[in-house]
Image 1 (cartoon, rainbow, N blue to C red):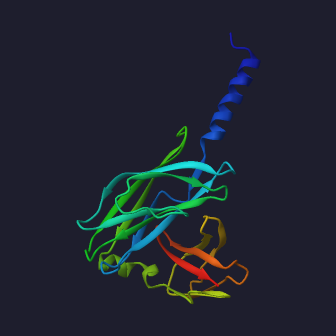
Image 2 (cartoon, helix red, strand yellow; image 1 turned 120 degrees about the vertical axis):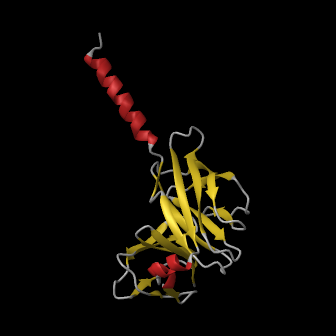
Image 3 (tube, rainbow, N blue to C red; image 1 turned 90 degrees about the horizontal axis):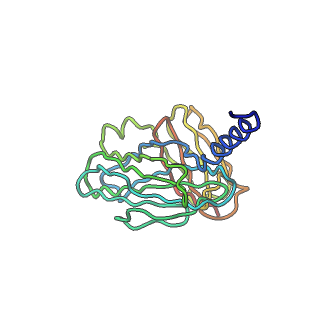
Length: 223
């Protein structure tokens, strides 16, 4: 016969297990990156939050790919970009969170494809997520993306960054090289927005603008 005490202990155990199962939280599991076939590369990231408030050992691996012939890709974390052909690696998710980044190298080929990364914490693998990065260099798709024509200047910047281009319900975030979020906001629907970077430390940052499922990421240097 199960006593009330045993029930309480069982409930506590279930709550404890469920409480530690969520180690990290991707901001999305599916993103589309637009570029031109003539670009050397185009790229974007998926921000990953840390739910344990301490640096967490993680692992990523290429789960599946479906890209046009002659396309190449590489994966980056906030601290390293791996050579093309790397199938997986361990990495550390800082206590402030971070991101995984995919670069597509179209090599002059028009088309579309995707990379799916399997992401999990190690050791233990108590949580597994699949992140899909879609790449698109089809001219029609580029015209449909407001973000493709978004201008970001000046770069390097000292006091403000200007963003010019038509967007609809677009948001932005800036992270430092460790993946720590330093700026967030909503872009003006009027076509012109400014981001104040005068209080940021000198260094390299990544600005991501998101419109629906579409996003672009730009490396920003603050002097």
